[in-house]
Image 1 (cartoon, helix red, strand yellow):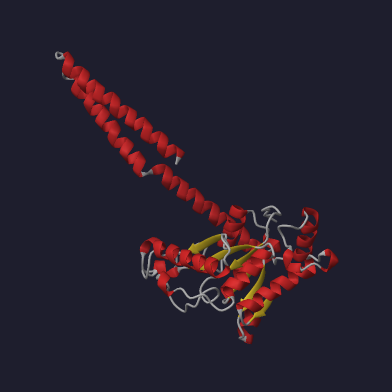
Image 2 (cartoon, rainbow, N blue to C red):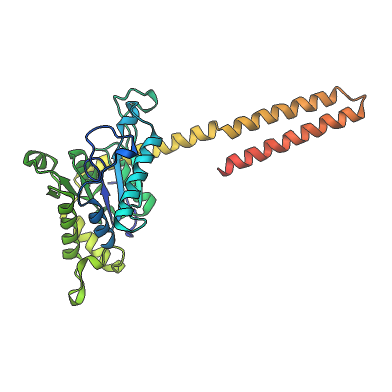
Length: 314
């Protein structure tokens, strides 16, 4: 069995975006159309006060369908973050946005494929856990679709589906369900209070995963994991997803190593250096012209080395 360890540092609430945080039934690439759902800003603030990190994970197949660009996705995400911060007077509130622009039936060839980040795959959660040192076993996922629940369950998180559809709830098998976002927040805060009771009747939401002593936090995580064990098929999917993520990163690094604009510029400078050196050799009888061409060759060679060094550091 492959054991994945991300460290016991922070718990998070992973949040679907469309129809969880904002109203949206289709492809949204215009930040002016962002409308927060009722109770979202207040709920996010309550989760933050309770010590949870907040991470948005969203499929954005509209990029693959050519409806909008990745820059548009970033603009919408930024508008969401801004509206939440303005409503709560707290900044920053959302720690990170992750999105997957790929779709296996997309119209844009560059994005037309499946991807380990695309829900129901758990790739975005696993990446966030690595990036932010998140304890997945102590974390939650809130979403309005079965794919959100499946991604969270596969990653080892507890899950809440936002739905009143009994059939969908039964089929998606979440840890809990709620009709509205505020209800989901209350489920998490109550579970947090039950698992992490505070002395002297202090308000449960005044503390949380961040302020809890590490030993107690580890024990609480173990209890949560025992109550919400990861099925063997989920472990296998996590293993496959991690392999896919590793391969994706390796391929990206290889592409970056094979070609970059800086390397292309360095290659051009190198060719010019050789050309100038050759022209200098053709002017052996004219010392002034020889020195001029050699000087140009040395200058181009210095540019070449500088560009390669900058490329290596980037």
